[in-house]
Image 1: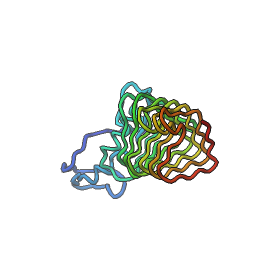
Image 2: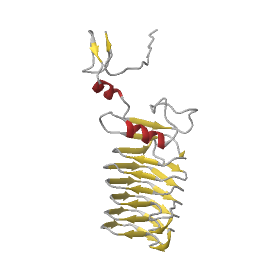
Image 3: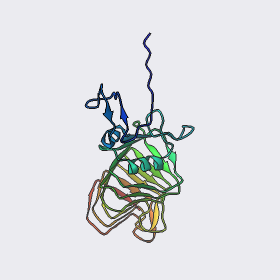
Image 4: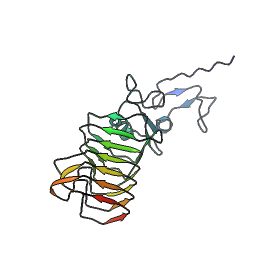
Length: 232
């Protein structure tokens, strides 16, 4: 019988150890000083979200966090290098506003869509946020401060704000691919209020409304629409 034991220990920049095992180039039979660069390599860049765990862990596959908010906070605070990915294993209900200030990919762990709901605003100030098979339901909208958001096979349902852009308010670039926006409302731009470039490819935008102007789209920048179905 072969036994395997994994031990988790706390490591801090500046400490030394007689042996340090890991992937190349971090294999040593002599004394090694643990530097911040080594610690950065060990930080998680893929964060898992599962609302069904009893308590939030560090975000690993076996110890996921419970909310997208917690996953976003881990990414924002991380000093790791590399591409960040958040994998949604379940739907979530959020209670605090969510912000992304680092580039990240957010996707479902399956072919089915994972839905984020709650009385919250989702804000992006990153250069690039990519969403795949992610839906938003009854949130206060996605607010894009700058940068680019690309969304594929996603949806916004019954989202609303007392300001502009019931589903999306954007001062950056947005591309929606095979997405659905329905039942959203705002003062201006019931579905989308865009001040920059908006691309709609094979999207359905229906049954949205505004209390002042533009029930579906209010565009103050450029737009490209390829087979986008607009139903007021």
